[in-house]
Figure 1: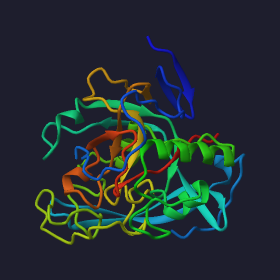
Figure 2 (figure 1 turned 120 degrees about the vertical axis):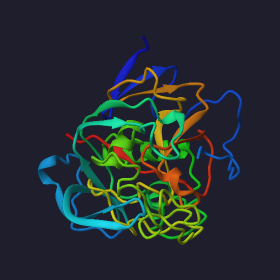
Figure 3 (figure 1 turned 90 degrees about the vertical axis):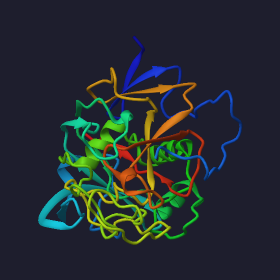
Length: 325
């Protein structure tokens, strides 16, 4: 049995590396930028920011949720709401964190799902405690406010930061934690899929398929019965497309999102609670959500990607998570 520690709402099984410390890779030197390494693959409302933020002083927001059929066509619309708090990052830059209710879900994809991979199973029920997650993918202005630089190729203050490695994302979380007094981190893989699905069991939180009107991906390669559509070949401003039922935007497409976990080949013997492992010599880390560069099936809720902890691509980004009492 490996030693474990409850950190920021995630039970971490330590196999030789401390959470949120720089990973040591005995076979590689400086972090590199590599666009050829392939993964398998917003204006704020009124806000408050406090180191003692609690669920009692969250701000509500309303949004529309859409559902699609196998052609990616919208077949229903409904109104929903969620609650959030806002961190002040300085110089007018803020970060909105949405409350994700705790619950359990079936993680992974069924064997009948089109274009699934074996690493998406076997399916199992996983329990995830309540936490907060970034309403949007982390933007370039937010990254700049904390880190003092902007490595992105596709410049734009409201576009997602990209060309960031897993290590870069972890360091951002460290500095954000120091600034706010909260324990910010990357979401676990289980948290990410739970938050993405938002109660759905279909390939996408929208439904059976998607179109470029709903997700930023390579529209030349549709999913299911959908037809071809626009391929933008670049990122878009965060929040440009409809959210899921939890009020999260761009969980499909735009940029891949790093998760905290090390890569594992499948879910055999995987835990059924929010436990992850951080291994000292683990080279590969998890990516979720697909990107503007990907075919539609890479953007499915259950699809899993991987790359080395120091890999940077112009479709790699992240969003943050935190537990607040």
